[in-house]
Image 1 (tube, rainbow, N blue to C red):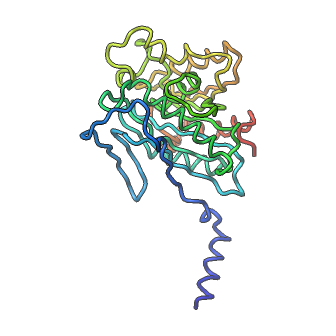
Image 2 (image 1 turned 180 degrees about the horizontal axis):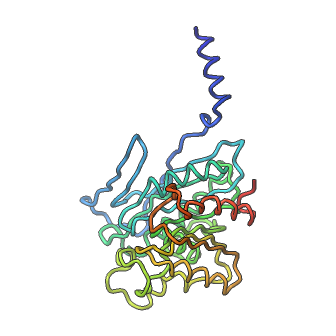
Length: 311
């Protein structure tokens, strides 16, 4: 009987190799203490779960990374840091986090979800720098663990959705900004960025007001607005970018992606943008079947064409 059971288990592993995929694991981002933090015992993290997986995060106080690694025999060495959206008020951790990591794994790419702190004066000395601190340290943490996680440290990108796209573009343009004391010389620069219906600008004419208010307040000075309008922060060292947006997006106007793409073109940086007629906002992998549902395949093709994710 025992031999029969062992034979069946072996047969299942041979027929269904996906069963050998490693389970995701979590890594604390700041095990030695969070920079610029303020103690508030009444500010409690609120994490929603479904069937054992995190689906939504609010009031994040303890940022971490959830690491999804593809099977070793399928891994191509590329990794992507994932920044879910939610207007800097919540994190849409499931369809803009878990689903994205699993999709990346299917293509041999490590998907690493960042549970970043949402800006709050109650737990941060400077709420505008909190998410960037987390994103920079996340990128450095991935590079520090690159060998252990079977990752090429020169092929680590970032993907962000909506406000997570703002954080991803902030990391791409402010990666060298000193927002906390770094104890080594590990770079926080992404090698590429994937910006999906992103908030890019804090220009009042076409920003997402909720994201702007949550990050820099209701009455920010002009310099603060410009500082976090990432289309204005592009330089010749900004990493290549792939952008996706829908023309009918009423939450985050398509002008956000267009402004970033134009800035990239000004400096001759590799970039590609897809604007779909419909789709609205917040569709994640866009599984409903509209033309916007082609973006994941287009993205993989771009990663292969640029050499960031070899076959």
